[in-house]
Image 1 (spheres, helix red, strand yellow):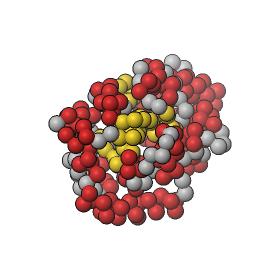
Image 2 (tube, rainbow, N blue to C red; image 1 turned 90 degrees about the vertical axis):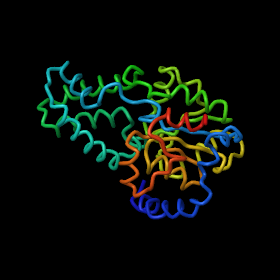
Image 3 (cartoon, one colour; image 1 turned 180 degrees about the horizontal axis):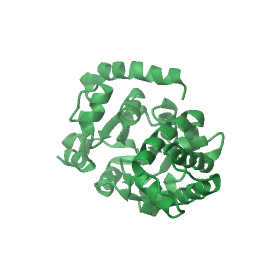
Image 4 (cartoon, rainbow, N blue to C red; image 1 turned 120 degrees about the vertical axis):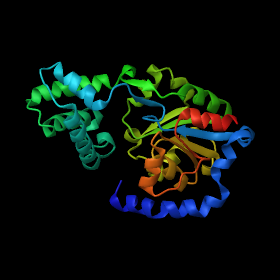
Amino acid sequence: MCCHFIRFIRDNIRKILKENASCKYSRLFIGRSFRCVMLRLTTLDVTNTLLRFARAPEEQYAAIAQLYGLNPDPKKLGSAFRATFKHFEKEFPYYGASSIGWQNWWLSVVADTFRKSGCNADDATLRTVGCHLNKHYSQGSAYELVEGTVPLLKKLTNKSNKIGVISNSDERISGILCQLGLGHYFDFVLTSYSFSCSKPDPKIFTKALEAAGGEIQPSEALHIGDDVYRDYLGARACGWKSFLVTKNLHKECEKEGLKIDTLSMFTSLYELLEALND
């Protein structure tokens, strides 16, 4: 995604929200009103919305590295990972979809993360650690369900014609959802890797409408996620309805300069479910 597009989204998204503030999209989906509305499409983010890492990545990286004789500092790994991830996101977008491929993308991220953390290891060892981590994060055991995931999906199954995933991730996410017993809830899974675009790019939301089949209008679609910019605002900028679910609600809204809307923003999936059931 080019810098010009990012600036365009940031400059216009709050204007879009203000223009639509009076209609309160979320009111259509709360309590009794929700039971009266049949959504034609609901999509969900995955990481930190439906699933989370069973162990903090920096701790997992350190634990696997120790199997190969390394002893890195998890805190330094965490800082190094965030910097490295941002660099590779820009250098090889969408997990290397049109360039090096997701496997090599992650191998490079892992190697550079350890180097930047001050870990002294040869290239062969870092590659071995990287391959181990690639395999680890391809397995459902590396993740756990966020509380309320299954009840929410059951609720949405009764209220939406189609349910899908829109995830800024590589192609492994579909298999992971199946391993965790969630695959049957979804009609499709869209990843930034598979389609070389990522939230909040309107193209991936448009692709979701197409994947759902039929002539579904943006106003008939709902997206649920944990990221204010990519999920909540990104969907609304495309004419969708959206819910934000994050335990860091106040912090995230303050960061984006938004007031908390209690009708469409929640601190947990159970809080969202309670609102839907009122």
